[in-house]
Amino acid sequence: MSNSLYDTLGVSKNASTDDIKKAYRRLARQYHPDINKEAGAEDKFKEINAAYEILSDEKKRSQYDRYGDSMFGGQSFQDFSRNTGGADINDILKNIFGGGFGGFSSNNNFRSGFGGFGGFEEDLDLQASIKIPFEKGILGGEHTISIQGEQIKIKIPHGVKDGEKLRVRNKGKNSNGQRGDLILKIELEKSDEYTREDDDLYKNIEISLKTALFGDKISINTPRKEVKVTIPPNSKNNQKIRLKGYGVQNRKTDIYGDMYLILNVKLPDTNALDPEFLKILEEKLP
Image (cartoon, rainbow, N blue to C red):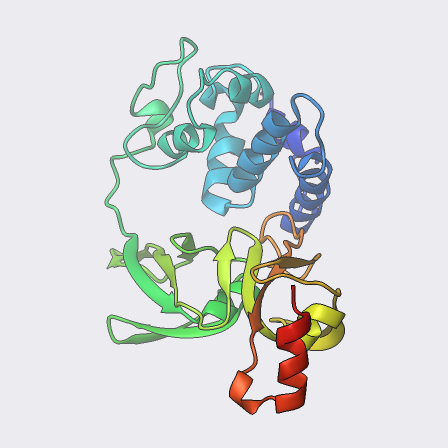
C-alpha cells in the first residue's frame, strides 16, 4: 500500500507526532510563498500544509494508515493535490476525511461510504464560539471557558486568527461511552492599541512637531517588549515606520509578521508658544 502522505513530509510511516511536526515546520519555512519565489513553491506549500493537517490528527492519520492512497483514487497524494482542477485542496480533504463523503474516486468524482466510514455515524462534535482578548490571539496562552456548565481550560496557539476554529479533544457530546470533540470558533476582541491584518500589526503613535522636524528616539510598547525606535527628521503625518519581526508569529510557519507605526504629528497650540518665537515663525515659515 502506497503511503505518499508520509513522503510529502519526508518522514517514515512510524514517525512520532513530534517528528511530523518538526518535518512540517522545516518544509513550511522552505516553501513559504513569502520566502520561496520559485514556480511551484506555493503549490508545494499547500501540499505540505494539507499533509500535516491529516497526519497531525489522530483520527485522520489512522484512516489514512488503513486505506493509504486508495483514498485519493489510487494516485499519490502529490499528484492528487496538483489535480484538483482549481478546487481548494482543504475543502476536498474535508469531504474525504470529514462527514458526508468518504473518498475520492479515480475519475475525480466523490463517492460516499468509501471503505465503510464517512457520514453514517452520529455526530458527537459540539460547536461553540468564544471571545478571546486581542493580545492572547497574538501571544497565545491558557484560556478558561464554560461550556454547558463545564469549566474547560484550553490552550490558545500563538497567531490564531479571527474566525479560525480550534478543536478540543474529547470535550464534545457523550453517547454510548463515546465522546466527540469541542470545535471552537475564535472571535478576537478589538484592541484600542493595534489593528491586525493577517500577521502584521498597525499602531498609531503621536509625536511632537519638534520630533517630526528634527527626529528623535522614542520608546514603543509592542505585544512582546518595549523597543527604542528612531523617528527620522522631516517625518510626515501618516508616515509609516516598519518594525520588522514585531508583528504576529504565524502559528503554522512560526514566521513573524511586522509592525507598522503610523505617525500622527501633534501641532502645538500657538497660544502656548513664546510670543517672540511665534513672531519669528510667522515671518520665516514658507
